[in-house]
Length: 118
Length: 108
Image 1 (cartoon, each protein chain N blue to C red):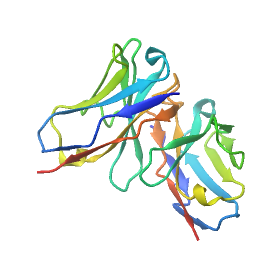
Image 2: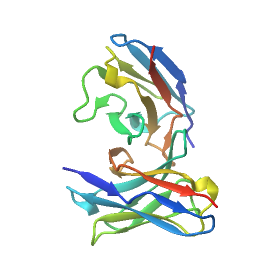
Image 3: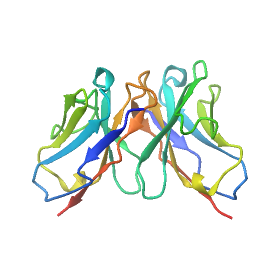
């Protein structure tokens, strides 16, 4: 069974750094892409970017390029989304999802709620 | 960037009725790479339809997708109580991948 288990909720202050995780199981981690999607409170879904853990090929949406970093550690089947300096506007639910080569997101994690507040 | 516009924003229907949700793209969607997702409150999105008209594994046949080019439709033939949710379309044929703003299907 394909499973994506995300790390727990985070409460941070503006300017702090953060790295959230998405651990995959039930399939070959290096054979599929992992995408990240943002959902701000009460809003819709936004595509952030995607990584292929097999060779770390990473593509970002222009809206998120330079704002976050997507990475993966294939030794532990885990993908990451990180910020170097959080802003209040980063407050959102973040989902990871397994994608195919075209970017279709078939299996989703449960989401990680990130709250940034002073 | 392809902009997806979903209509209506909110659809109020009763169980047993049929629902038609629309997704219009600002440019042609390559290879009909258009998907539909369902999201219930407090849950992650779930893939319903991919390649415009193919149902994902385990999705009931009352859900169907159609369309090509710039106009796509999700049809739910007979609404069950568990179908009331928010529905998003997504194109994955061009970079960056984009989502529509969603249609809220609510109980009348």
